[in-house]
Image (spheres, helix red, strand yellow):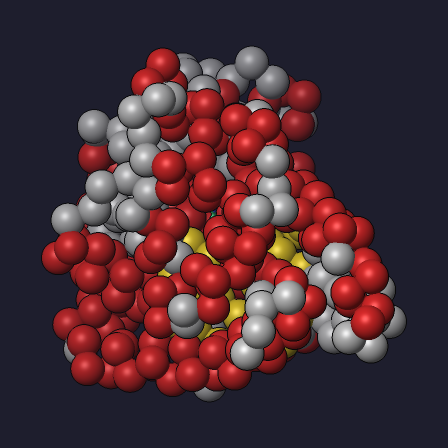
Length: 343
Ligand code: TRP
């Protein structure tokens, strides 16, 4: 059987969205809505795997939804909703907790990074996080998932869970008259290296909301002035820009700023170097600042406007949750029968 092509992705509402989230994820979601059925989720249940103040969680959830829309996702076309409003996510995640093995979870590098030496004292949810992510995706039988590089391992685990479910329950799936490949083996759409955005202070570290320096990242809510200042103050080496890609190796800050320019301009890094190679930072930084301001400042204005209008944002999320819920319930109905739950 072939599955309807369907795209699902999610972003956690935990802290400020920045340029890395935009170029690595949100911006790539936009064109897919014209070619695919698309579902874009604000994964609030994932966020609480580490402590979130309830008021902050509400604000951050609306901010992610606002960012989706300000970036050009049309909530009439794509389904935009917050995870917790579709209770089937939690329900399927429980079934998957009983399919996945604990060892699979301990092997996740994101878990190891987040838990550190403290692995006995983090929430059980942090360990089971990938099982909920698999539920997000498979509830909609999504065939493609656009994610950053760092989520590749979680996607592989989603495929392992789908395959194990299909296999463990093969007889029951057949007895229900359902197709043997009940859950699809989802394909990742991994962002290329050009969309791996690094800190503006240190080109060897990822741009991150947890970096104590606000100068290290461009927030999606920054105004034109802040965007331009941060780019002009970004750390660089003293050399002019190289003429070729090879010239960027060993120059992480230069590589990052050229990568940001390329991603914003929808051009390759080689094309950017063809234009700016041999020029100094005094030429390149203002050009990058102009480009960033021109693209990001209107989006930030729109985001601020949307976030202030909680009635509209909440109505969009509720409408999305209803549409998502209809698909989710269809899958869950089948899953309950497959597993042997009496209804
Ligand atoms: N784990 C993802 C991240 O931290 C967020 C996420 C949750 C997700 N569920 C998802 C991404 C499903 C893609 C599909 O970035």
